[in-house]
Length: 411
Image (tube, rainbow, N blue to C red; front, side, top):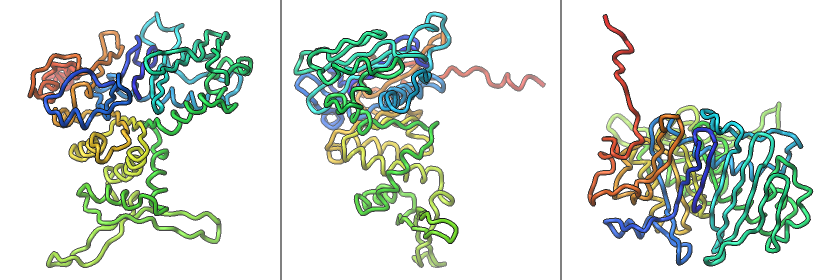
């Protein structure tokens, strides 16, 4: 992923842009530049990871939701949607100016050496506009553009020539063309489906629990999964999938995930292994780490873009830091996977872990609209403490806490 822009969606009033493009800056430690940045062309290098900070309710989660909305709408707008079914977008509600305006979404990404810029504007009733551009070397050319009911299709996007009339008002043209096996559109839809993964703490986690379960059920990467779970000093020495045979009533086969820990005698010697049900007898942090483990393995192996809201939730700061280092290291991230996450963990604000352009902030203005900006926009002296300066409020994006003692009143 290169860039993502959103406007008039939830707390985002004006269009803001989140960028994974490496800024033309040099980190004080050359190793950090070598590890955290990778080139996709002579003119552009990207970041392997990025952290987004901000006060509670500042809009961090809304950025993740915006990317998730775009992904879901691209994948589902042409499938199983009724003719007049409303589009599930949410405009910025704190301004009269935005009430009749559409929500704006645009993403720039690369598939191999080819770059695309795709976006759309939608309201609750229809797609207001839509566009797709392709970049070859340094030249960008239009594949199609849409304004209301009018869709212009260029000769370079011949797969969409006869599908304009088949596109409903509440469906994306790109999604429709992919349904008819267009080569470019199918490649782009596959990128949204397979490469882009968004995880919100507020959503059902089942969509990424399955990856860990599937790895345990087969032999593929099973040892890697165990290594991640047992390697974080949780006291766990083993991880097994236990199959529960069907009973007399039904014919479904169920399974449990079991962790094993050493049981000791009175002298402190290892006696035997004790089994625990991971969902019923392990901590919330252990459960999250297990669920993340399969996702991390697949993302790093296949070069996916992993976007996680509240990555640090229920995890120790050293565990979160270790996960970030997996993505920043060329040894464990040879496929240039990207990790983008929101967090409150200021322990990660270190020049030993991040370049300045890898640290982002969200902050609401007096009208409740979210602004999004990077630490790279600040002039910071070498060896400055990102963490101390952030806590001190030098970069903004921190909560203003009033006198809470007044809540109790006076005796």
